[in-house]
Image 1 (tube, rainbow, N blue to C red):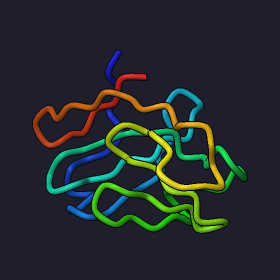
Image 2 (cartoon, one colour; image 1 turned 135 degrees about the horizontal axis):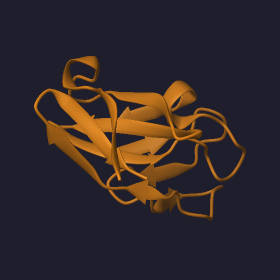
Image 3 (tube, rainbow, N blue to C red; image 1 turned 90 degrees about the vertical axis):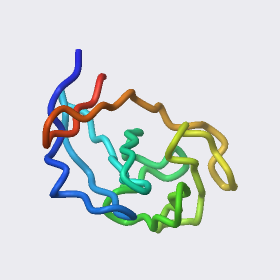
Image 4 (cartoon, rainbow, N blue to C red; image 1 turned 120 degrees about the vertical axis):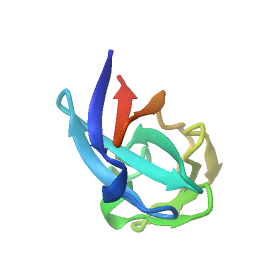
Length: 101
């Protein structure tokens, strides 16, 4: 079931944000006007990707130890992480970004 995560105006292109949905921390990234949602917590050291990470195009790098993930799929791109993030479908309705957990 899709749930409102935020308004489009809250997340300009090239930025990311942590939201709480159904008791889960989710990072949402705006990549050139397309929205992607993945787990917010790095699988290596439990750091917040939305709060402590750095976004470069479609890659988020953990601010704690440098693990890298593709925000479009949740796939690990660089060590020390070895476990992918869960990713979630998103859609835009009106001015809202919705995430399906």
